[in-house]
Amino acid sequence: MAHYMRGMVTAVRPVKEYVRLSIKAERIAEEMQPGQFAMISAGTEPLLPRPFSIAHVDRGVLSFIFQDVGRGTGMLASLRVGDSVRLLGPLGKPFRVDVGDRPVMVAGGRGIAPFFELARRLSGRSPLLFYGGRTQAQIIETGFFVRLCSEIIVSTEDGGMGHKGFITEPFAEYLAKSTPPVIYACGPHAMLRRVAEIAGSVPTELSMEARMACGYGICIGCVIPTGREGYRRVCLDGPVFSGDEIRWQDLK
Ligand SMILES: Cc1cc2nc3c(=O)[nH]c(=O)nc-3n(C[C@H](O)[C@H](O)[C@H](O)COP(=O)(O)OP(=O)(O)OC[C@H]3O[C@@H](n4cnc5c(N)ncnc54)[C@H](O)[C@@H]3O)c2cc1C
Ligand code: FES
Image (cartoon, rainbow, N blue to C red; front, top):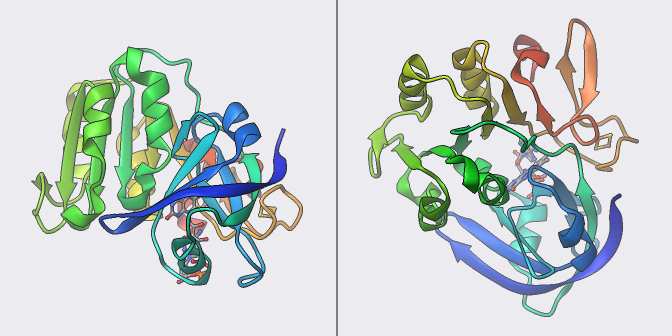
């Protein structure tokens, strides 16, 4: 069940190209499952709340990792410890976690956010992480994943860290030799589309993004093309979808 509540900011700090925002919100923290998100707003400008994956949960505190790209995220980045924010969550369909050994996670840039909690829940299953960014400034907190994953493969487009190029390249090489029980991915749509192509018949759990107004299925503002002709709401039917459900050619 989602809770509409106020939470208190307990930390705001830059992490390379991102901001890590921690908010005390016990009821959401208790019920959250990996892959779920919360709508957050602070003040009245912008009016609409913004959606963010819940990255970490620790003793009633939720942490979010976000990129400052506009008005809403700029406002969140300027919060101070002790400020109050409005939250609605946990929302959306989470990732499946009842999976076999050596599941694979593929993250692009800020798409790393939902994998912190997922990696914790999958740690007994020896997960692998493929993690790409444009530059090393988009590759964060690898130490956290080193403790939980059996392998981490990093790439940057400029070659500043790890493999030079897109993360889908080492991911494709790995899939040519191995068959993981499931592939989780979160990142830009182009990366998700490529992950779904490379995955072939391996099940995929892709966390999709869309502009959202309400976050709970009412405004129909967040639909993406799925199935033969249908559209589904990212906030309620997702954000996690199987790659073969999505009509990639019709996705804006
Ligand atoms: C389920 C879900 C989880 C998300 N989790 C995270 C997260 O963990 N970390 C994070 O940094 N971001 C996340 N996002 C994206 C985040 O919600 C947007 O970046 C944020 O809403 C932008 O708000 P703004 O007011 O700062 O930007 P605006 O001023 O509204 O827009 C700034 C620019 O960003 C573009 N933009 C805004 N929202 C989106 C979007 N959803 N998809 C593509 N382009 C967009 C706009 O077109 C514009 O060019 C998530 C989105 C969804 C749907
Ligand atoms: S954001 Fe309103 S229906 Fe999804």
